[in-house]
Image (cartoon, rainbow, N blue to C red):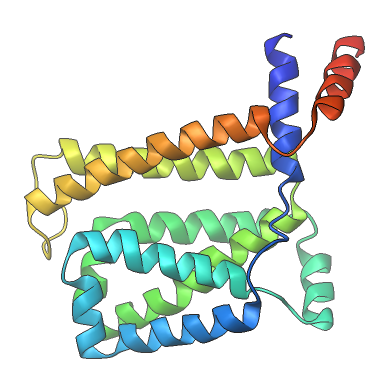
Amino acid sequence: MDILTLCNMASRRLNNWQLNELPAPSTARALLVFVIMVGITPAGAMWFESSMTTHMLVQLPLLIVLGAVCYQPKAQLNSFLTRIDPLGAIAFICYTGWMLFWMLPLNLDLATIEPSVRLLKLISVPIGIGCCFRWLWHQSNAVLKCVVVFETWASVTRLGWLYIESPLQLCSSYLIGEQQRVGTLLLVISGISATVAVFYSLFGSFNKKNDSTLAKSTSNG
């Protein structure tokens, strides 16, 4: 089996993952509202933002996941979104744009200081990242899904490496020791996710019959 066959099998497996088995959106909406309300209050904001670890590795992922699970548009909205973004390209731009925006240390700092930026974070992260990810994954083909997965993984890896290697304190709200600790955790997450992605791509939900059929059709093509 050559590299081209393996790549085709990986993209087909990735395309087969449709995010259909997620919890009920009503439960996720209630949890999302609760997390947002806690994040707005001074005590809740202090708990989430008191350390870089809870800010970047607890609050932000929680908002993203709940936003993705909450997404279930009504028929009219779904029809409108399908007309303007049938392939998920606009959602991909929004997803990557907001993700990169909140990975910048300056914006993370501002969210701990300015209430308006904090509110922007609590709204834009679940909608601009979570909901957009759910929509683009539903609409996109296997190639775009591979791009999304790789870009997300690469961004997490680059940020982790930057936090570890930088001799400067990138976030004024957090000490350099905590910055390096978060960088190490990001690289650990990056390594684990890369391993899981490879195993899922090669040994995921397709059965052996589908694998052999795909391999045969690729070799014949």
